[in-house]
Length: 270
Image (cartoon, rainbow, N blue to C red; front, side, top):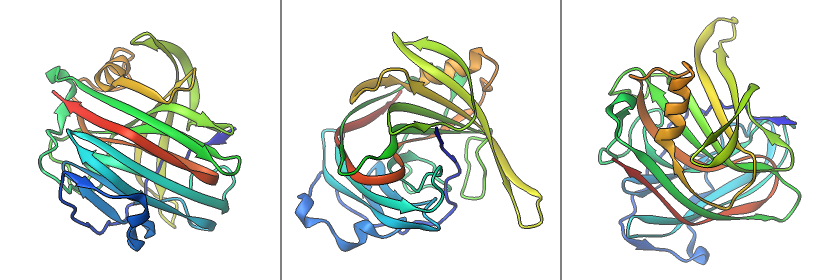
């Protein structure tokens, strides 16, 4: 099983402002769409060409916006990765709403404190193309802090991943705790922890990682993110007064060549 290393690179992104609504044909992709950590704005979202685990690997990730209309984003990310750590994530081409080691937009309606009972849901329809057998997932990455106004230097306290689809033996960080049913869907819940150390071996940061892996793969779902967080609170894994600061969605790629095409994506906060 391939195990996800959930640490996201603490690398500053370069903003590329794009007005919305916007229509872009795939053939009109700008060259910098394949530049590491390039961002494309579709306020309140932005696309992040996040290649946090690419060190030592060969390949590239390209992420682009097709359209943003009526609150729904149509976007894609292509990948081609080989070499490097065979069980490590190379990239997480993703769409971001909220905090990601800093803020790029102040109109996200985030953070939301869990005990405020403000509901957060997301709709996502996507397709997966595998030009070569790929090890990858299609997942949400949701971040939590203990403060309401985290900045780039503030480490998260908890991370919740929601895997809607996984291919090629990809598996999450940590160990399986139990199988749960939320909103009529069965999930395997894994619990792990990220621990970062400096060259001297001292711990510089750490946070908890909770991963929901959908038992049956899907290519279209309405996900009640609040219900997923509440299930962690009920199990005393997540504090009820924590702040949900970010909702990201994309594909973690371990290896292979292909594409994730999100025909419709949106997040509703409150």
